[in-house]
Length: 374
Length: 161
Image (cartoon, rainbow over all chains, first blue to last red; front, side, top):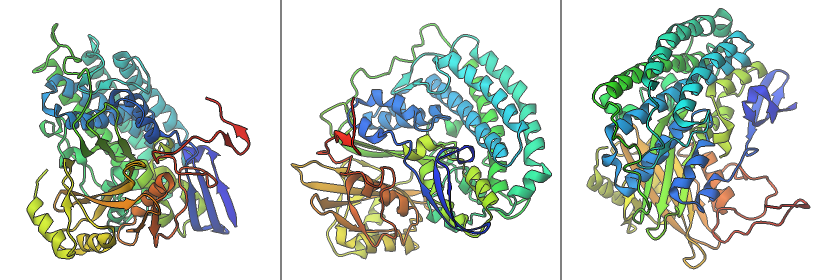
């Protein structure tokens, strides 16, 4: 039997169509059809100056726009050779907002996953808590989701006065709420029954398929680009990298992936706390501090090719740039989207499972169709 | 990131006798190889315990335009145990670009190669399922080629903008 799942279906997290060939309830083959949200990012990028590409970058992974901006800005700064001239305060603010956005993205991932599996309450809880993050980011940047806040060589604006205090209030408020979310959803008997031993992704398959982010960590590899590459100020910060241990079933099952995401929320809160300490201590706000001071007026990198990668909430986000040295427009700008590569594993791990489990597996991959289709 | 270029260069040279050139100003370090030896070099880079490139991060296609008459495909490899990145580049003729698929070595090549085919029309030989991925199946032309012209009509609908 052939069933079309999507493109308009809430459990596909966007406009994704799955062509399912099934024998009764058992899935024989899944063929994902993507491209419904293709907005020609790479074509647009070939006609715009480097700094004007940033709003397009936002719209790729629209629930974690700060992380995409951070990676993009980092890449162009490396091309210009100004990566080590960025003020420390700017770097700490970047990491702070990126980690806040990482929490927001993981909340969406875990909450909508609960929604897919029939748990309705956690979704409202995460939406309530995520709104606090979005309001803080709106206060800083002026936009709720698509910020254009991190600029090449600096920031759009310094943090507003009192931001650090509000952030601390948020951390104090939020810590018990994550614990609550963990209790009601992750440790829930029904949730465990639906996700443990479902969609097991062995490590060798994960590496061969180029899977990154929480998915490969859930399969048992301690691989986090924040630690491996040590970009920005991450080497100065302390955080653990949680990996899947197979507590409720096999290593690399759907439960492990959700659990890793919740644990990463705690780690992001730790990073936020350390960034706030620095922003109130060594790199305090001063009257003469200008976050746009090192923003170059004309962005014209030398002729070169560069591949930059960074840890997004969903995996390794890579940008490939080719600059021809004659113009301020990239000759080629390719985004290696983590959701795109992670989604390609779906046919492999969903052979022989029930249709209800397919929804569980798809939700645990945590895709954003804006990034899959670009 | 640790840099071990000389060793890597020697290693790749030991796999193939064809001459290879370093990519100028490339981050990470990369080499240009002949398109005929790409598959064997990739296979060796994957299997050889001294290289052990177990992850294929990204495949990029580039069109150099009509005057240059060439297209490029760039493979970004990464070795998790050695923490080493490498870029491999092949240069193809613009008319009838063809290259061996590396899907049997790295499974991640499946969708990445389909995307390159979709955008540039580079044919990957022995690919199990070479269809368009992002564009509709009936789309004409390859949009990221430099000489691509926007169609005025799509299925009889006029496109205005």
